[in-house]
Amino acid sequence: MILDKFKLDNRLAIVTGASRGIGRAIAVGLAEAGADIVPVARNELLLEELAREIRSLGRKCLPVKCDISNLEDIKRMVTVTKNEFGRIDILVNNAAINKRKSSLEVTESDWDEQMSINLKGAYFTAQEVAWVMKEEKKGKIINICSNVSVVGLPGQVIYCISKGGISQMTKAMALDLARYNIRVNALGPGLTKTELTEPIFKDKEKLDYRLNRIPLHRVADPEDMQGAAVFLASDASDYMTGHTIYVDGGWIISG
Image (cartoon, rainbow, N blue to C red):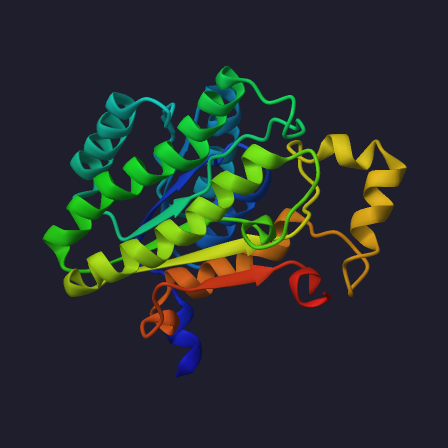
């Protein structure tokens, strides 16, 4: 049965940036599909709230506080996960920040802070998890990029650069890891209503600018990302690697 290929029973998924927004929604979606979850973030209180929800679904959940800009934190998180579950089947590389500044205003500290999480942290999280997946000779890595991986936005230059990097990282890692039966794909959300995008919703001009570029003429809710995430994590996507699914209401095709 084709629907059986979408089930995630007996799978273990790490989701970074899982305390809120898209990461939280994806963690819940994977749990609803059958996976046990290791939600990762810096906010322990929000992680515990999420853990209670996931456990109420009958899934195992081990929340881990981790700052992915710190490589030792990443190594510790992966070690704790492997020691507890013995394997890692799925990684959702979601953690990111967005410092909204124009190209002439960005400082070195702005650059370093955002790149250390959005790009460096994502890369080394994927690398560390891939070592575990290599031992199992299988795995699914889902990098969360953005529609700004391919379109530009004013006032978000570092974010655009970092998410473009995630898109290219996905392609190159897919080639390197295919020999180990590890699939690496990306999910590219469009404008989604979260705490990260809250400033846009307080500025009518900016919001209207974006809505006018979205053919479906609405922004996404975090739950709109669950279906694509479950697909990429499941056996249904086994013959797919190195690609990005854009869930953006048609923005990038609208010209």
